[in-house]
Image (cartoon, rainbow, N blue to C red; front, side, top):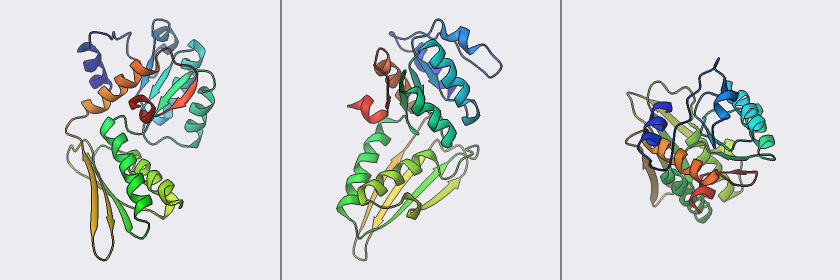
Length: 212
């Protein structure tokens, strides 16, 4: 993802890469010349990244999947002082899918729901952050507990990410699906968010805010 973001910046006329960071490097020094920090590292680095963004008052775009309560809390606290765009999936198409899933779940309360997702064999978390995001949308539409939703996860090959939400009754089935052909879509979405968040007031935002 870091390379995909760097490629996206290189292809853009309005963006410049200030630098890249790996744990052990001087993130504070890097942020001295940065307008926005885009983070696609790992949950273990999130609190370090957030602290550095706060220290320099630099807007943060975070697309790290698999965050726990501690990392999410640090993002929430940071959003009181800097603008933060956090989303478990930076794809614009997934943001639209989330809205459609919410609407369908609300309109079809008697339908059974299953979320199926397939990713590459290197992906650590299961269900994926996107699958959980879609589950939250379903639960919000129905006013139910996300824990009641059934997930089916598969890890094979180098699949960037396929998600399918199936709503079924005894008489009909509705399927809403999204498929990624290249990881570049996540980088492009993150850069869209980076453009949007620059100069914003503090707050916690998602890709829905960026698109709207």
